[in-house]
Length: 67
Image (cartoon, one colour):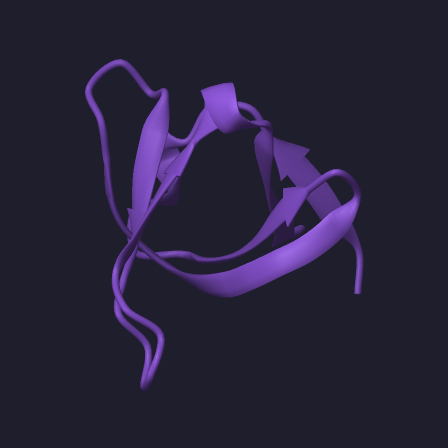
């Protein structure tokens, strides 16, 4: 699986992504929404995992399978 880093999050709504911080995957999920300024996104609720806000300022990166 070839993954690549996404700097621009607006195009990821509805896509399945990996959330990485300090080189470790912290969660995977579907992007539910992205802020207008492209600085934060919401991961959709998934089973027992609640909806979660992910912010660039906190050092999170978004990776996705290429394709």
